[in-house]
Image 1 (cartoon, rainbow, N blue to C red):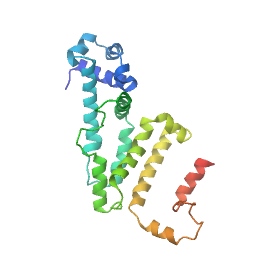
Image 2: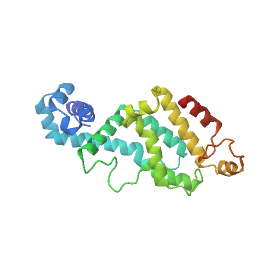
Image 3: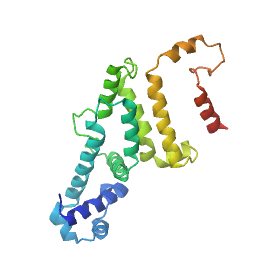
Image 4: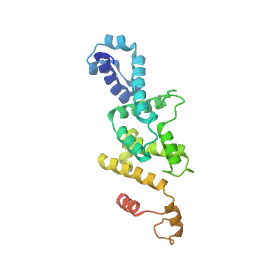
Length: 226
């Protein structure tokens, strides 16, 4: 466990780097927030870069525990819903913003998990396919990407999310995302609707060029587009 001063410096630095990136972060603001001297910062971390690397390693380690190791024998929907809750925490939001800053700065090591590590969600989706929870012919890599977008887009792009959802309150949006995940996992494991859709008369429950639209989806569409 780091000394109390080092812990305060790390906490202050997480906020500073998340808000301003490495280039925009200021040591003066970090030491002021941590209530330490610049000498203490350099004693514990050596340099601004050393402090950044320490912050990054801590956040990446926590992210690894949250999302990469994971448990593959739990129901897939439980894991995906838990991911959404974790993504709402301030710690993960700081990590997400640091990753975005690194991507903008052209950082070479901006992956959210260690090199050669398989994302836990990908492992969980493959395991769910093996258990028959979701259709095995679906590409697990693309599914992982889709669920990651549902989980993390609102955190990483809050302004875009606000426009897309027409200012939906955060609590309502959180519940809508969870309900969407539940529905997707259920439908991805149920092949019957695709067969039933072929038997529906033209124009009933369908849109031109699209598949069947369930009653919940129709009510949601009416709510968004009226």
